Length: 202
Image 1 (cartoon, rainbow, N blue to C red):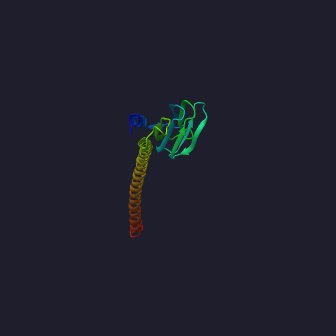
Image 2: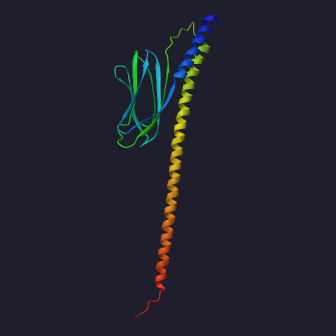
Image 3: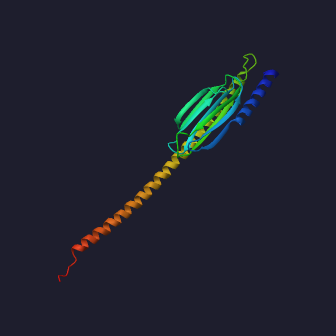
């Protein structure tokens, strides 16, 4: 490998390392009848992916949309519990994405989301070595694995909460059944005892 190729490889590794450090994971609470918006400044041909999951609140659904610098809607999801939106910037500017809970007037929603991007680097077949392409491919695969892990964590927490809630309901239902059983037994004993009581005739 030539010195020029080594320099390109080193530059690519440093770029990917900085990109991975820019990959962000957030947990936000979206109040009832409210929305939360965020933005990213991108250049033409940059790529951005937003992955989200609703962990708590209501029917575990949220509205999501992504707009370009001219406020055109690129992606829109209505009442989804989880979703992924990937896009490639067609122009320089500020790209905005929002989570809306305006359909709910009571329940707050907890939303976990990840944002990661790939900065566009022009490829020259005579310069970029196969190892550099492999590094890029590994970086993309790593972000996918990270998203999947965080999705599994959110699902595990949701299932654990459901199991604990079901356990509590079963416990209190058993307590109620026991109380009703004792009440019915006490009433039957009292009722049967009244049959054997001798009433004095005056």
